[in-house]
Image (cartoon, rainbow, N blue to C red; front, side, top):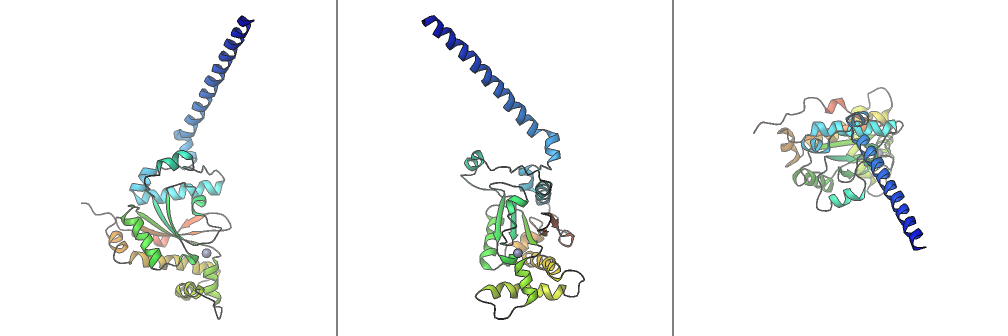
Length: 256
Ligand SMILES: [Zn+2]
């Protein structure tokens, strides 16, 4: 009887070892495929460290992530327990996003990024004031984040309110509208949708404003140490368009 039990135990152990070996093989095979050069190219994956070191590469990384999102092949990177552990002692976000609070524009999702990737400042119409500026300066100076993206979106409610100019605006909402009004006036002559024209102009104005912002961002920008660019998210397609007007004549980093 004892002998039979022993034989059964050995058989059981062999079967189990085999299963372990098989599953080990499978896991290895899958991870090789995921990390392959072909897979990375097909998913527009750009190295995270390179994006952190160079804002031009950071723009490409955001574009690649948005392409995945639009094509329905998001990889949801760095959202696991291992990443939580890795980041417990600090962060190195490769981009600061200055975006609208709109619930339809969740930044990590639309750019398909993960924990520790994006430093985000969000207010309605991405209207900025002292606390927002301080947040951007903190990311630039303390976290060494070299890219700032002002991200507007089509059909923005805050911009629509500035276009419609309602009377007796309650509470602090008037602050948002007043800040967006100049962009509405500047774009009023343009053909097409007045709200989306104002959305673009608002982003362009906000980019210019941040590039001039003393004492930190302006100097870093003209020295070519950081880039400040603008983009618009299309709520119909999920696509982010980086605005050409904000990508021209970017300062180059001065050699030391
Ligand atoms: Zn909005």
